[in-house]
Length: 101
Image 1: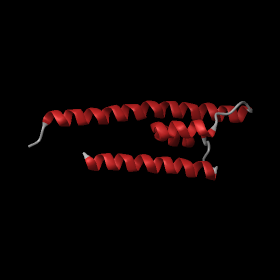
Image 2 (image 1 turned 90 degrees about the vertical axis):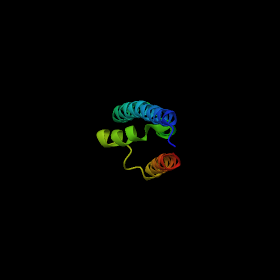
Image 3 (image 1 turned 120 degrees about the horizontal axis):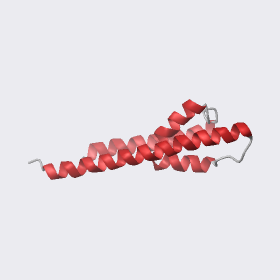
Image 4 (image 1 turned 30 degrees about the vertical axis):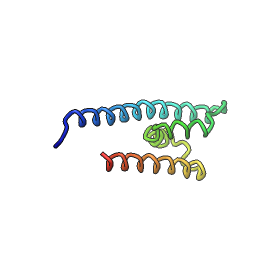
């Protein structure tokens, strides 16, 4: 027997997760733009550790958009390997969550 209350709660978790990722992605996108501007002007840069931290918190979609829009960080092999690992980790989490529910 299907319990409607459980489905409502389940959907709320998805909504919260999606909203959280959207918020962190917007921040990550903005930080990529800020870092690119600093790179062009020779100012103090955002540490790669900070960028990866934002990606790990769920901002990887914003990072993809920032890399494309600002042409930033795409040529750094080591950076991109860590970034792709973070994306793979998140995709695996979403797939596992989907299969468990």
